[in-house]
Image (cartoon, rainbow, N blue to C red; front, side, top):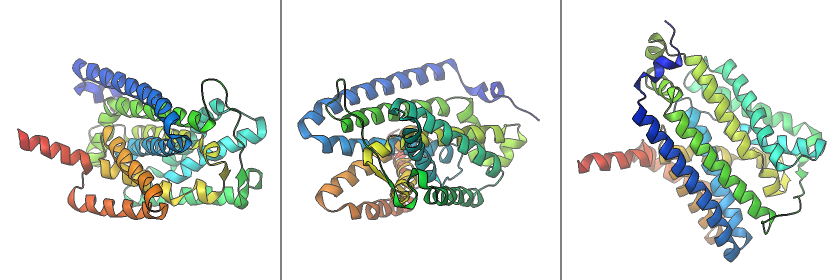
Length: 333
């Protein structure tokens, strides 16, 4: 039996659509206000404030991107660092070939990573559970091997990237990067809201609960999973596009960083998957904590803190902060 998207959306009411639009407008307004706040506060605290804000917002974007596939459909992606690195090296390649500006590199990086996500999904999404996760991890290893042996983009020795001159209302290029990342993270969260509260989200939720039963009911599982892998890959590639200008020296170890891979998975799990706001809360909580630890103790403690928090939440609150909030609300009724 076949099922199109009109059948899947039979449970979406006009009230749901109005609530979704209201949520989207609120997120967009919050993103604009945050961008203005970054400019005002950053002029007081200097460039490090922009650097820290960039990292936190980058993880908001990555956690949201991972959740589109891992949270909504239940397919755990261990290859997030690979998609991030694809976006990073797309910027480097376009810069060396055409001296392309960031405004061109960001969508191009998203498209390349999205196409890789589509191809990966088509080849591996017939796998389920741990087998799919291993396939995504293998993809990241393959991409890293390719980059290590591609001397044009720096290879194993890495490559230096010069930041363009700052112009317009921005005081520094780091400030520009922080604002760009804020706007991209805001757009990604809005995309997550649209996915969650549309026929795609309803279909992915059915697959997450019981894929066999969903397919028997006519849910187009392969189509939905391809949409999720493509969109997730696109957003991860977009997150990696400004990274060369942020770090100014890129090598495979930094682009395929273990910290990026672990945080991208841990933040949605701690915040709570299957909702648009869980990854945002998890990324803000862990991201800000890591930046504070970097300046007060040591950056080496970051992954230790992530590991400890992840173990605690898996043992005590497997549904993350979202689950704790829901339990609290139910107990108050």
